[in-house]
Amino acid sequence: MTEEDPRLGLTVVHKRYVSAAQAHYAGNLVDGAFGLALFGDVATELCIRTDGDEGLFASYSDVQFLGEIRGGDVVETKGTVVRVGRRSREIEFLASVLCRGRPDLGISAAEVLTEPIVAIRARGTVVVP
Image (tube, rainbow, N blue to C red; front, top):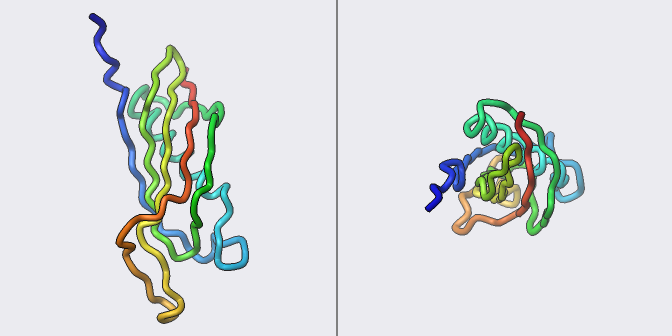
C-alpha cells in the first residue's frame, strides 16, 4: 500500500482588488493576462509551500475564460495541487469575482455578489529544482 503524497490537494487562495488602472478595454474590462498573472502568484506560493522554492511555470494545458473581470472587482484566485511528479506539480486554478463595482449606483458604489462569478478556469504545470 502506497502512502498518498501530502502535497496533493494543497490549496492556496489569494484575494485582490482590481483597480480601474488595470482595466484595459471598453466596459472597464481587464485583459485575460491579468488573471493568468494572478495564477502565477498562486503557483509561486504553492511551490514555496511544497518545495521551498519559487519554482518556474512551465505550461498551461487548459485555460477557459468564462466571465468578465472588471476594474472595481474583488477577485479570489485559488490553486490546488492535483498531481505531483518528481520535479513537476500540476495545479488546477480558479479565478472568481466576489465583489463588483456598481457605477450605475454611484461613483464608488460596489456590492458583494450573492453568487461568485467564475471568470477563469485553468490547469498548469510548474517545475521545481
